[in-house]
Image (cartoon, rainbow, N blue to C red; front, side):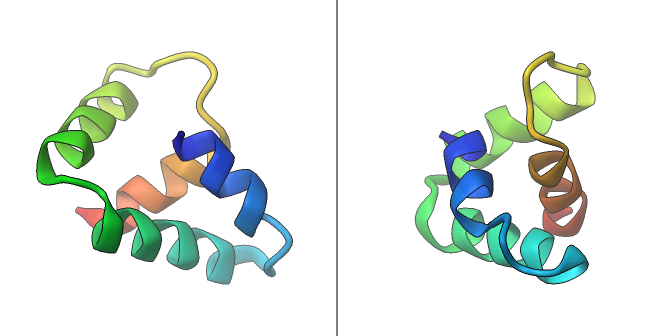
Length: 60
């Protein structure tokens, strides 16, 4: 789902796209979902859009 959000917001320029993805996840995702996403990024999960990884760094 995070990759879908990144795909929809990826048209924004650079850091603005990462901030938009982080904002969406922060506002609409359940805390358990956010925790799981952070754990996936920390584990180096394959298949995550680089924009999602950048957004997670902003969520911390």
